[in-house]
Amino acid sequence: MQLPDSLIKNIEVEYLRQLTNILKEGKADRTLAKTSAQAFLKLLPFADDNDMLLKLGNFGEEFPLFTKLHVYALGLIEELKTKEVLEKMRKLMKDNDIDGAIQLIDK
Image (tube, rainbow, N blue to C red; front, side):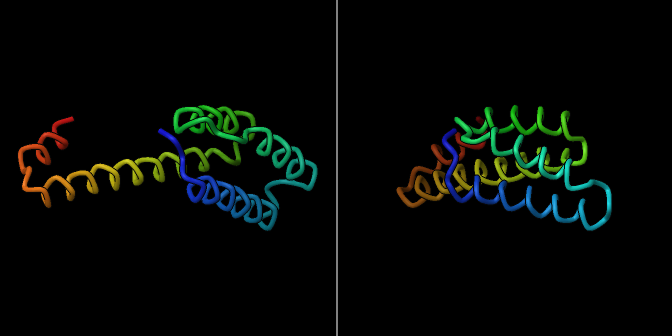
């Protein structure tokens, strides 16, 4: 699935949020912060949702303090997919294709 720019921006902001918290809590020093930031930037761009999840999973293995980033991304992707299905269902219902809308649920 092609990723909207807003989703990628959310991931970037969440990385920065987590980095800030890790530094404030004294769980990492500036060297680790710089190394993780450089590694994070190398992840970009993401080809699609699978690529993003794979890269963030590997990133979390390399930098265990950022494993929550993968979980956050997974939640965003699931939310996006749910919205897409609901929008398709809404359109089908509007077109009086109730059976088509119900079939989307079965997929």
